[in-house]
Image (cartoon, rainbow, N blue to C red):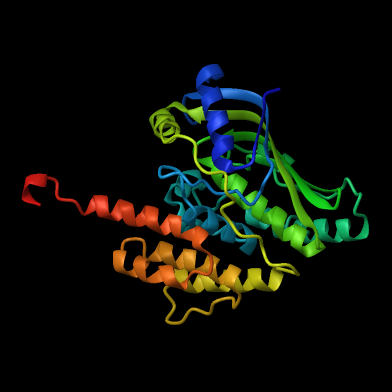
Length: 325
């Protein structure tokens, strides 16, 4: 079983991407030709380094939007298409998203699985039953366009830290993996804060870890950037029960996404910065507005993502014929 271990998401992706080029098997599943590695384990030893810093893959806006979709319990296609338009490719004819994680996380057959995990580990810290199930037997009973790639999430308290182990049936290295690691380690940190624990490592098991051949050029550009700093990108989540802040963030997200006249920010530096990232996404085509947001962030670590966006806007505004500039 191939095992990859690294302190940052960028380091982890580079090792996996390099290996899939060297050892991947060419397959042709339903969504297109892939290079495939099977039965892989990936360990992110510092879950705070959950975001890529690269120019080509350094995205924070869509992963954060997707996390809000999950935590809201929503399966609304319009919500997630606001951040990830391609989700429409996976919707059923009636517009439903069969593989939406939100309802399965917070209301799966009437069970809020996140609450269950927190309650279980509060009662029995050594429990091995703190498991969230996403893939279900009903997912194989119809020809659905999309079903969850994630089978289970297990939370384990070891040496006073909260470890997380995720089992995936399938994972796209280029598009899916960065989003999954972000959302799942954020959930890990939410549960850790709920229990008053520090973060442990994050382990990601995948049956089919693959790269679509249509993304090979993109991956090559990512690898050509070279190795990046190992600094942790995100600040630690504030101590204490985080769920009132989560609800406040979700309220702000809705107000920002629907262009409400007034946005109510959560009221703490960490959570306000996450809301400001969502605001930056709404202003992603406005250079002056993005520049104006910089001074409002409590944490400088988020500036890189605004700067990347500003750099892309500058390139887009260059005249086609440089002799006219």
